[in-house]
Image (cartoon, rainbow, N blue to C red):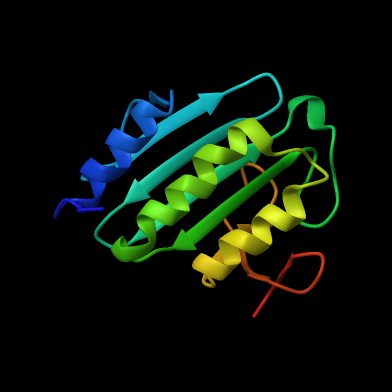
Length: 145
């Protein structure tokens, strides 16, 4: 697959084709999109300059907790390389159709295989952001380093 020089253009085209909607405001030079379904809402922000992908996964009604999920939500920060964006996008867009709370740990393991520098937000909403490295220990969890 030929990859455009602008990873943002690749990201936007793939997500729009998969039924995602743009979010406003977009980060300067970046991208913000969301896919809201009955079983799952995925929201992402991408900044090409630092190769940073922020991904929020939310299951309805806080139906799942444990591991990286708190009240049905996980808020992740991933350091990505433009060369792996197509595969990362495939995993993220496929999640809307397939992901359940029970499959979440397996899905995170797959993302960690692509983005070993993945961090979870462990601070309370509204508090200053505290990140912890997500490890591949089964089940995947976040540890402060």
